[in-house]
Length: 222
Image 1: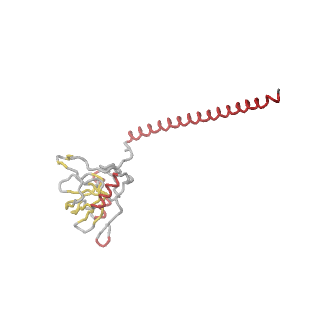
Image 2: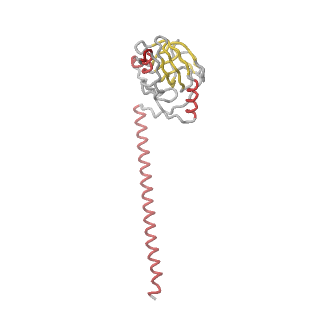
Image 3: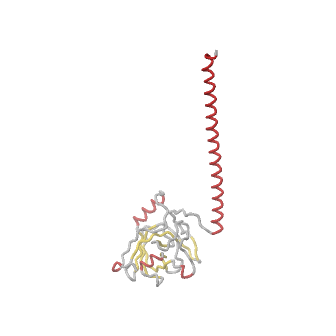
């Protein structure tokens, strides 16, 4: 009888060990799940703390650059009506951000289309052009020119048609003077391609402008 019952007893022992192993695995999974939930809660609490700290310190959240035209708006009693214009060409006065001289630091601020202004990048602000778009700015006083990425709104001073970054003002040769008479021409094909890329989310968020394209007298950049 003992011999006959041995296989049955062995099966019971195997089932017992199998049950214990399964129980241990379930217990291990439960512990891992609990640990994961705990980690998520800690991270969530940390995220709330970081957000609170950011709000207290006035830190802006990461920008989300977008393609933008925008609705009509009024500044200092003057109405501006943004629109897509792939044939834009104008002559007038250019200025540059240069807020440092007035105690204003524009560097690092979010632009009108959600990028970050970098005073060392080749960018510009325009009152009505679509953002972003690419324009060639030529200083009519010295012949220098540069391609800039329009990603902000401004200037809002009568007679001025474009506001450029500090680096662009250096290249165009009017950083010290502050203003210059310029010609602004949109690059239609490049601007259309930029629009399509933005709308298809193929363009990574960037703060910098396009690769420097300078046509300065004698090859100088200052």
